Image (cartoon, rainbow, N blue to C red; front, side, top):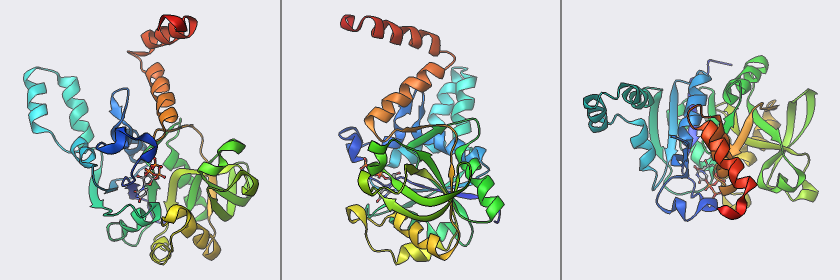
Length: 293
Ligand code: UTP
């Protein structure tokens, strides 16, 4: 597999699970302590060796562009006040990677959002990362996929095992395990009923793909929810060439879901060196005396 330089971030969904918050603001700009969710995933991509990020945005997502842009006024204020550490933090965000933007004009599905990046990706392998899935592990999640993509010179999807009751929320893998945590994919089922799920291995928003996926997506008819599903295109891809699925090591938080977002907030709050000790005490006080809250 050629060097991986580009990652596509599909950001044009409606975020209905997080309404009304998502009515006018992107869920990817929700903060986990002091950084927006999308910054965690950008940092993961950069740490995995990606140098260009293609953000597929839609209406109401302008705050994402502003976050990764230079803010002259803010930088001047910080400089004048001598807040040099904050100034460094703010400037670093603007230079982490080359970020380019395109718009998905209608939310026709994740597969369609990826197709919108076709011309910007060109004829080379690329990653796809769903920014609201924050993965906190020792090795960046995309780098874990990349190891397998290089070993087999093939596209790879990231998976984790979910509980039986959760299979209906995910794309689920049908495949055979060729070594621990690594599967050759035969097929995928999008959001199956519990009784129809071929396994509990769920696709969790990280992919390394080859550009032949675009021709498949172009001819893909709408699937579950009337949307053009990336999962359906991957089923076709798997029938043309070997497709692998690898278990991603790390804690995963679906921050596009209210409960997942709260879990992530608590975890990252506890891990924060400045806030962690006090926050831990606060939480244990609440748990010890819930009636006093
Ligand atoms: P989700 O299934 O999480 O949908 O999309 P959503 O609209 O963001 O959120 P809910 O389920 O309504 O609460 C998975 C990813 O695909 C992107 C989303 O932004 C998210 O990153 N997506 C989805 C698009 O970019 N365009 C689409 O048409 C649909």
